[in-house]
Length: 144
Image 1: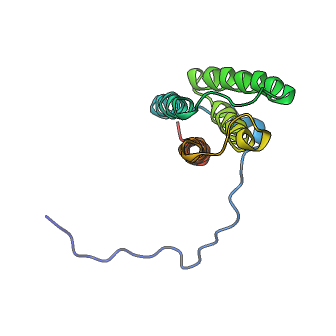
Image 2: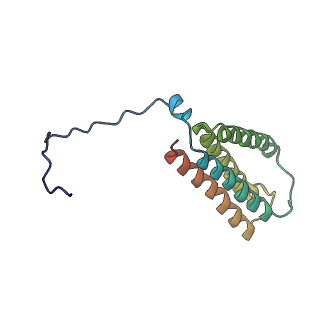
């Protein structure tokens, strides 16, 4: 049977102080759910394949700094994969870093003369910024 009695209020004062946050090292080693790891990995696979598929042949040589930064980008992807497989939040941070490097590549491509600016560039930028957004959202919201 449903009771219609009112509950007695035991305390009339509520104190809400600032929420204590864990230190950064603890926060980065927290686990994430398997679903988040799989979704971030799948998002990287799909958007990176679309972005690189849109890119035409180069019209100019690769600058030396771009070659060096390419190795940093590949290292960030390896760290991202390791972190997602380990189901740790630092994998999401590595994903955000790799997405930032990929966005920088996309911006620098027509500026450096490696490619000319054309409609494909807007699609590649949409994919790169999508990776930044998805990584940032997952990093802020992911729970175990």
